Image 1 (cartoon, helix red, strand yellow):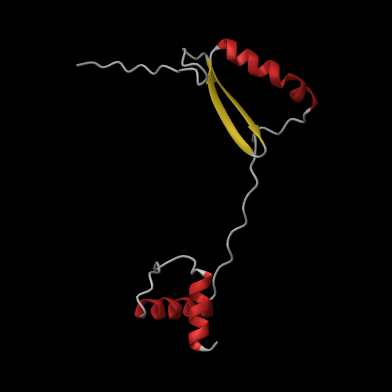
Image 2 (cartoon, rainbow, N blue to C red):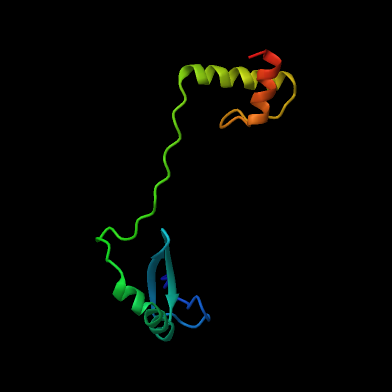
Length: 115
């Protein structure tokens, strides 16, 4: 049995049949919108004066600002974190086995351990 699958692009503004997908970016965020010819022309006309005054980016497109990676924890930090997790477990304090330890729990541990 043969199958034919058709994908219909719908205008994100009014739900009519879309003619194209437009891509644009603003404030480091990329967007794309499926629009019919009328809405595409309206968007292009609205942005025309800004596009004329703007600088083009290279072919790589719109880039976003990268967030810096979290600092790697060293061996002593890992040991300290494990000690806090063990302490919390003995006191029935809910704490995940991974990830950041909430400051208030670390402070409770330090106060009790006299550190």
